[in-house]
Image (cartoon, rainbow, N blue to C red; front, side, top):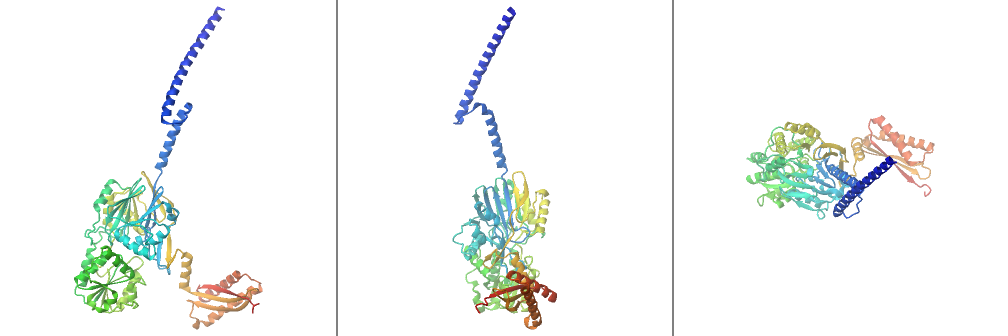
Length: 628
């Protein structure tokens, strides 16, 4: 019993101690809860469930990490839509999150197989789908391969255009032709001027080229600085005194450049590009003691060259006339903006050239590339209304041949020689220098900028590849060089760069007022017509019975000379009649089936007979015999 009592006392004591301990713990917990709740209530005016404090903190931490992760995933996209693996049609897209800026918007000239096509412009379908993101178009300089497609672009995406005074002056002429001049915002920029577009900060930097006011563009982004050189060369004695800003380029390089995009046009030429001033000396030499009329063909947009021709003309007391619509436009804009200087009375109207002796005249003309409709080509064919070529003419080609134009230029030179004119071109005299950097200048640019990544632009594939090798030679790791193609996306973040997916890109053909309505099928038909001609088969059928009422009659264009091939035409008629008789016997009344069968039978017969494949077009005309 005593033992039981002791056990009972001991148990009661233990319970009491436990209760006391539990009470103490409870009080501590209450104070902890109260203190924690007060602290949390001071920072957030909401009901706090104490038991969930730890999980909430973990959730907030998770959320913050997720947000940081999402932020770090934002990448800069560089998307060339033109200018790679080709000459011309330059257009590059820079996209970061919900903002896009576009650098240049140029055109290319049609290739030989693009029959009837006037211009080739970039396909901007990707930008049209993202038109709300596009903030501006930035122009590096005023050459056609960089500004020629601007009117077509602005018709679909109307955004401000930023560029130098001369580039915008030339663009304004184009916009007026398309009735866009009053609805487009043009913003003139100066070298070293900085403009912000959301997360993009853009700086324009002066470079030298074959046109005044050429610019490189430095684009500062959240992932780093991108430098786009535009077209450039290093000319230490430029005509207009606008020296390339190597100091600023070096400063940007020192600050750190993530990606360099650099002009590859002349990468295959070793050494340095000659200064534009060297052409002036050669022109003076040719003008000296020349008693002939001098006609100089050059690129319409080469204002520096035009200035040097005028300088030589003034020095040798000659008047200057200008021929060619594009040349006249550039001259007017350049004079108005102060980029071209000529003493009063030097430049005369082309209608007044007959008032002067040959030795008193210089004519500046378009057509240096042998373009069929250009002024010089029409002169060589004797078709120009105001200028006739005679043995008293010396004609200077102050230009180089754009790849693919060599035959056309050679043909024009031959025709001019046949008319007795003296023809001077770059193989005979140093009457042209390039506006693009050669290998040593490209190396200089790479050495000054020291980019982390490199992307060669403006050139065919072999040019881009060779430029990539130059970059390796100057210290850029091979794995950091990206030989891109139009439409391919280059994604860059702070730690890496890689080529990813492809967007829609390609070409849009401009034929007269039609934009994009000429495609591969139309070009194929034009090619077929140009090579083999066309045969039209006209057949009149009874509307109800589909029986032949009259015909078939055969009309040909570009196939054979009908008068000398009447037997062949009669045979073609007979083949068509036989096929029509078969259709009638088999009770075929579907006009589409009749057309198809006549076409197929004639194609087979004509190929068997002539080994030619002309386009065959059956035309079925319905006649209501009941009315008769």
